[in-house]
Length: 170
Image (tube, rainbow, N blue to C red; front, side, top):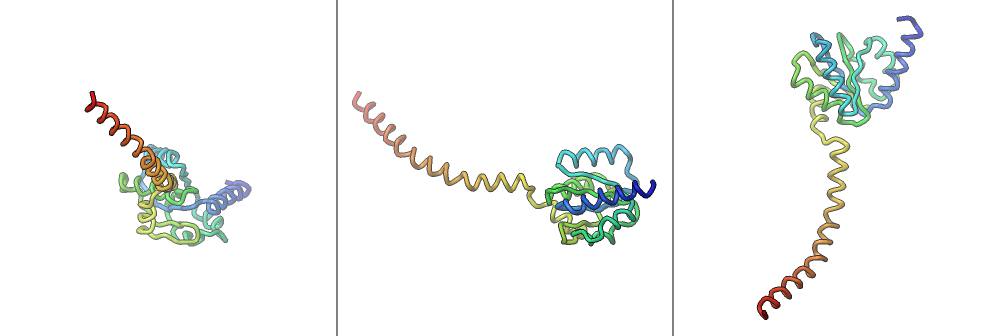
């Protein structure tokens, strides 16, 4: 890899570190190509990404970025899992780590906040952006459906009373 290619990689990594809601660092020693492809596929499904980069270049790219604290985790064979959604990459990494003992999560960063192994696990248990939006919409929509039900109830009650009276008269 020549200097121009290295500079390009550093720029790409810098953009990743700048724009990601969460970055998870893990060791992947011993994973097969098929297992890495499975990880990448799962990440893609969750709108997350997986990147293997030279630690030295990643440390250069981290300089001055919000998640600069993960620099100390970049030793050995590391892989970065990242996403704009602050939860997606952590969920993908945690789920994959449960299935593969060779995939060892070291920690990560959520913005300026450094995460240790337990922190990544805690973030992975949080609801995703889509789940939060769905619950908020449900909370907003519930009172409206209750009001509609309350308004419609007296009319249905009157109709059933009239129906009962009509049956008795006949």
